[in-house]
Length: 213
Image (tube, rainbow, N blue to C red; front, top):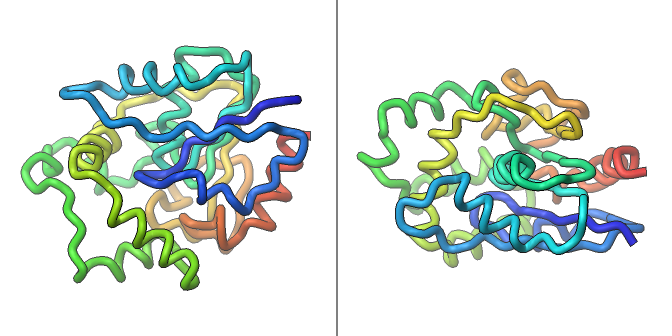
């Protein structure tokens, strides 16, 4: 039995992978940990990697989970890294995110969810139906302020420039969080948004089957 470990997007859980078909793989989910005080992304990746109990598994990351996959790949041997709706280096990050990091705006105005901007967030995420909206609302309710502020700081200040040779990138043509124009993807789901892992699962599954066969 081959093993695939999955890391979800920002503050999400294993339900975002519920529509993927891993077939011959045994599925394992790596949950987000509570960040320690002043913890670096490298230190966090080291702690998260300790949840991987099999040699050279496939590691799949969604959005921020993809960033974490890149960091974990620097620490342990993996047979393949698969990124979905994510970025491989800081060069693929939209300019506004890099500017937030450079000006330390995330420290001046810590991220906070307001009801007023939730429709904008939903649009950027590519939410298309009530099932997805319910899931995102549950994530918003459960997210901790400590994790939120830490994660946003790590994303906008991420400086990685190296890409593992065994990394495969699947991206959506209509991703509003990480626009395709900045991305060098191996596979593109033309009408896929940031949440295409759920609402374009058939297309993503077909690509995954090709990658993992």
